[in-house]
Amino acid sequence: MSNEESEDRGFTIVDKRDDGESPESGASEPALPPVDFPGFLISLATSALFHLGLVPDPATGEPGEKNVSLARHTIDTIELLAEKTQGNLTTEEETLIRELLTELRMRFVEAS
Image (cartoon, rainbow, N blue to C red):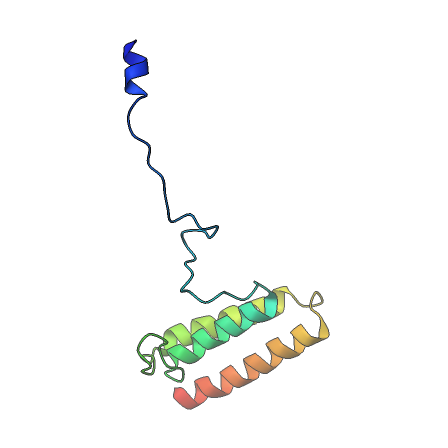
């Protein structure tokens, strides 16, 4: 028996965690919704509301710490998306982005 053959006689590691799911998404985690433009906009809007102290932290249930600079930055990001996607959105997407911006701007003024 050569040295190479004796090295191959080691042990085998079998990962018993492999149940068809990726390691990043365990069975205890909720399924994420599909990525789409309205979901992305709502995610950004929720982030802005969180930074205005109007949405609770999902981990603690406590309101987010108020940070109007981060809220303004997120609102500006949504405004940029509105400008850059103009003419390329469905009617529903245009309505959503317009209504989100209106609501966020009013909340920002109230919080400032």
